[in-house]
Length: 461
Image (tube, rainbow, N blue to C red; front, side, top):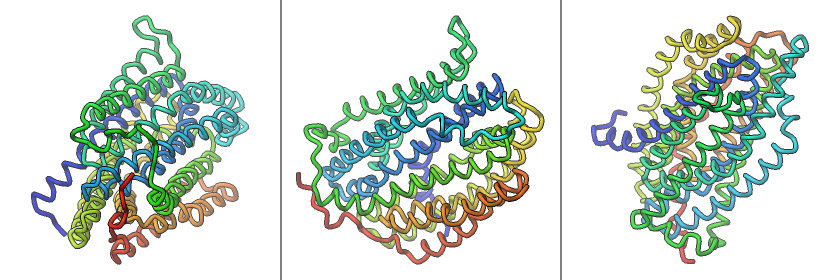
């Protein structure tokens, strides 16, 4: 179903700022990755392993704020600022708890978690070096957990209320700071010490403080535009009825994000059974692919915002029609993006100071990602469609239960009990998602997500 010009303007007004922010962030991450990769394969692999662990934390924070964010988008759509204020407070509490838990886990069990990804006894010296670099990187990255979490509290609320430009500009500022500091601190330019992986971590942490500072200052200086922030810290009171609803709707979503991210980390651990070359190749492929994946990630976020606001305003039929157009638009765009990614796949690995074997693996893995990009785009948009209507139990089954009950067992068995090389093993892991694609199509087509979850929620203090 095609949309008119007004539809595309509306979608792009929401999606483009998110896409630009995520695109710049991932592009700079690519540059950072290349800088570390220029130092050596062990350094690059160590950073990649820690970032895989940090990915679990990042997605868990995303899940925590998204649970309340379902209500926030619908409250804003219905013009109820007190409701947005309460969801903001809920995000704060959930985020602080997760930061404390993650900090304790990484501090006391970080080395054991890193060792899960190190295999290949024939490369004992490389494994030991990789472990050392990973521990150095993790020790600094712990200081960035809090600013990352707080930034998600503010930025997600701004996006739910239609303000996507400020998080974008804050993200751009942060990645520019990160990029410059990476160059100075990794290689020791202009009199700065050459800190290698430690320098990369320091740059990332500083950039996170820059980003959260910008978002916080702008939000509190524009209280007239965003009334929910007025008096938000006078207390941390949240109506019990709303807490109950957020927990009922949001707990499955938060649990889903945690289980899904852990499942993805476990999949990576399975792939790591093929040795350090596989870890390095997957790191290059995932970093480069993330630059292109921002298209369907931005479209997914747009689905959540646009459809959530329409449902909150009670425009059910318009929400259905708009969602159909969004899904079609997303798949069409990502098909073209996948073609471009496949064409340029041999070029990116050449920037890394690594072996020809690793470069060849990375190029092949990138082509696999490109092939399945339209499918993943549809799955991602379907997930956010279901989530926008508060169908969090269904999204839990659709997302994390699927990976733990289907994808992970198959890949686990193949990685441990077969000699299947990394390329066909990775292809198999991606191909299994076609089942999820079919399930998503059926659920969205049936319209199980079409509901207003804030119509009866009182917003009194």
